[in-house]
Image (tube, one colour):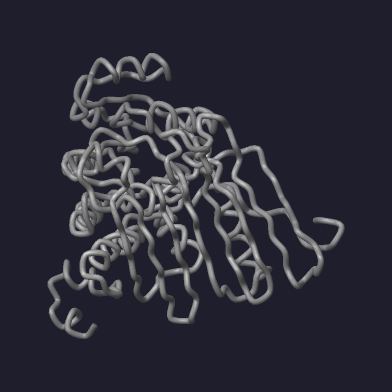
Length: 382
C-alpha cells in the first residue's frame, strides 16, 4: 500500500500449481523452446523430462544443455508412458499433424500446451480444439503476452476499478523481430506473429469486440526477402459499449538497419473515465533482461503518477505462466485460463484482420465463426 492509500500490490505474477513434478515432454528444440520455455520451467521448478525435434542432433544438444532425455522421433517421445503433458513448439503448419499424433496417446497424456498461432488459420485451430476435446485432453495455448508483467498489472487495475470504465486503448509497436525460417514459406510477417499478441491482450483486458477494421501493407525491408502482405498492420477494434482499441504494428520502423538512428519499442496506453495507465513492453531489448513497465494515475488519488516496478521480464519469465495455467487446470479439473476454445476467439480476430484488409471493410467476428461452421443463417445475419 502506498502512502497515498492506492495499493501497489498488483496481481502481476501467475498462479502456480500445487505440484510441480508433472512430467513434461517437449516437441521442438528451436530458440523458443531452448531459450524461453525450458529456462522458465527450470526456474519455476517444473519437470520437463524429454525432448524431440525435427533435428535429432539439435534435440540432443538442447537435452544435454537442460538435462533431458532426447528422442530421435517425437512419436517415440509420445509413446513414453511417463509423459503427462506435452509442450508443442513447432511451426504452425506442422502443429495440427503433431496434435493428431498426441491424441492417439490419451491413455497417459492429459494436457497439451500448443504454440500460438493455433494452426495456419481459424479453421485449423477449430480442428485442433475438436481433436483435444474429443480425446479428453486439456488444451492450453502459449499466448504468452497475457503473462507479460505490465499487461497483467494493467488487468489488475481494470479489475479493481482504478481506471473506471475503459474508453480508449492503444498499442504502438515499433520493433524489428527476428524472422523464423518457416515464415518465408508461409508468407507471414506480422499479423499471425506479433499482432496476435496484441489482439489477445485486448481480449484479455476488455473481452471480445463486435467488429474490427484493418489496413496492411508490406514491410519494405522484408519485401526484398520474400513476398508477403502483412508487414505494417493497423487495426481498430469496436466494442458494443463504445470502447475502441487500436494497434499500430510496425516492423519497418524507418531505415533503422540501413543507417538512420533507431526509435524502437512497444508502448501501450489505456484511458478510462477515472484513470489512465501507460506502459512499455521490454521485449525489443532482448537478450538484455529489460522489465516491462507500468505507470498509472487515477482520480481516486489526484495528482499522482504511480510507478510500480518488478524484476521479472516478458522473455523468458512469462513462459512460466502459460505452462502454469495448464498445470493448474489439470489439478483443478478446470479449463486453462488460455484454453484452446478461448483462443479460438483470438484466432478469429486475426482471420478478421486478413478479411478486412483484403476487402477494405469492417468485419464482424461472427462472420469468421459462421464461415467455418458453415451456418449460412449466421452469415446472412451480418
